[in-house]
Image (tube, helix red, strand yellow):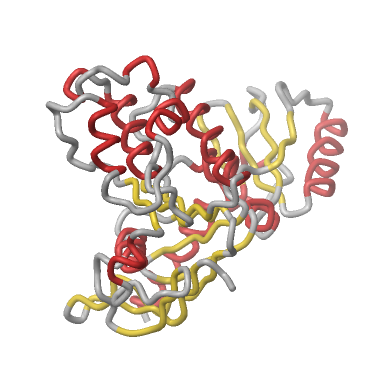
Length: 308
């Protein structure tokens, strides 16, 4: 059975649809990223899955429970890492983690969890003395101390420096190795691309796309050509479709659905003119670029629908 099943989920605030007929599944032991712009309905969806918000209609099942009625039996099996958990400033790291451990009948070793999130050297420090990144690590520790089967991670590396982010990524990878299911929300698309087995993109409360990061990248224009525009060449002279070309100063960026054909046309044109293309490169699109195209397409479709 999937760890999470969401079918035809809707959440209305008056006539406003915060979540609009949303359906997806998360497999047991999977790292699943829920992506979308601010106001897309991600937080509302996750809060419904956590049991903190009621739904208007649709079906939701998490670890075999309906979160709305699962009660303590359900909450004991999940872990939640919020963006701002409101920590007790006067306790030390070890005191706070030990206190939270007492809330669960099944718990992990306090020292092991503190070590796992990289706070061993701060175990005797008061929360008020921790940096922003160290507080996020402490949030992770509190989410893990109950040995959850499913962990909700809401923007887990906000405020982390690059080294701390990589350490957090390693922690999520360890959770996958332990068979834990992770539902991740993040605005860092490189993070989702690195960590997630599958991703779902939500915009205006609706599911736009779902699949592996590679699936989403392949489903959009899959390659990017870049070069510096020669001084004697106008953008209109290029043998590339204008909607696919962006110019920033002298840097030209072109997306290509068929990169071989596009590159052949561009280099053949340059050779025929005796023109060089400084810095010419071809690269695979990133998940961030695919995501932005998917969201932009939804916004454009909605604008056209409003104009009809």
